[in-house]
Image 1 (cartoon, rainbow, N blue to C red):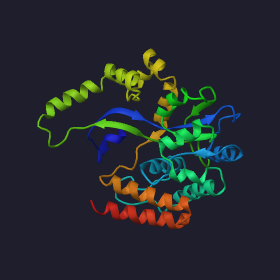
Image 2 (image 1 turned 90 degrees about the vertical axis):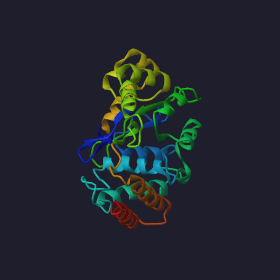
Image 3 (image 1 turned 180 degrees about the vertical axis):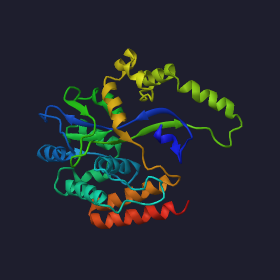
Length: 282
């Protein structure tokens, strides 16, 4: 519901949700890591960790997952001020950049989106992977089908782990010629029976908690319990009418830090400046 709210009002109905997982090779890792620090350390001993490090929305999400786990933010609660020039942002940028520099994550990760990450993991070229739930079913149909497991995001620097929400909401256009019909469809598409149908036939994670306990959903999604936990620990992306510009400010500057084109301090400062400019346009 938080993803539908702006300035105290709800503008949409959650249709389906989503949250990422950590995938790991159970034949290479003796114990699932409890925090990001030990995950990277273990990755360095094995074949590394892959994620979505290309300059696009996926990098924004991957960065925010770590930043939220560090207790940081990029905008204030009221959405009016940029908060990216912080110790938490600089720390996460350093952690991610050092991961590539030290070889815990391959340099090629800066060219990866979801599919490049998945292919690297399935081909045996990564011990850990950050990806969305869709990769689970595909992994079970690959040569590593019985050699991987999943976990929700681990903690960071003593804080609890946190993900970033994905999925879709249904809203009615202000220009709709049939708002009543639109509302009727939105209510139909989000009731329990349709949530179950979308989960079992289209693998879209439900937004209704009880749907995850349905036997048919559990059969179609063997990871249903883990997915519900992942969504429970996830947070919305920064809520703002200028979110596209905010995301661009994040992924451009994170990418520059990963590439070594900017120091963590420089990237955090430029990210903050770019976000503030975006906020001032609305």
